[in-house]
Length: 242
Image 1 (cartoon, rainbow, N blue to C red):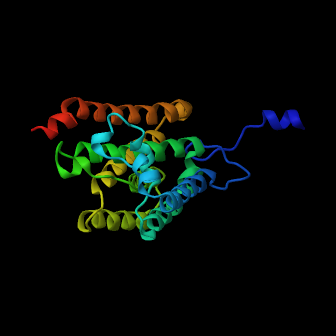
Image 2: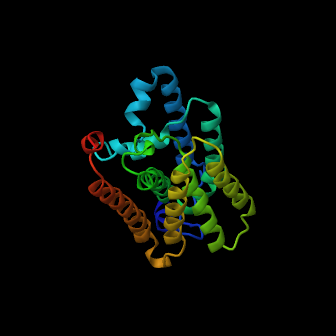
Image 3: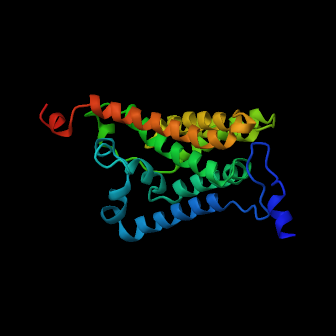
């Protein structure tokens, strides 16, 4: 019986993810847990001891590139910020995690988070206020999930009007309300949709390879764009002595 179980073909979703007996969304729950713990650390340790070391600021990104990712696990002092992002993550995360599998879903989320920070960098003029503005929040990654959900729903010919409405509302909020980095929303949305398209339209026999190549290529392009931005931008010293 054990030998038969090993040789039986594993059931998979329409996009090639393994169907597990325990289908709890562990990656989604882990991401929510990390954001919640980080928010508590922000409140207990304070800005100087925690937030300032992890938040993304364009002028610091060249020497401390890890901030482009760690900023996605930080949120503002108001509980509304983290609650809104975690609610959105819980709406779309488990569904995407099940259809894509844990590894591809994690890659989608993390690369979208980095893309959100880099988009803010690319649209910030060196020396401007935005160049020295801290950016934090999971919104870039969440918008990446929104974009992915829309693409995959279209690929599978499923209705996603609710997600489209939620996406439209959040996009409008980003442009209308102050102190919201709409640039990060846009970056995460575009990159998340592009990665999902690679997953959704991969040839059946090459899904595993595409599951590695697509997010790696997207991350390479995002990092390359950031490197080019820094290479052509004046240094902090040059900006101070203009």
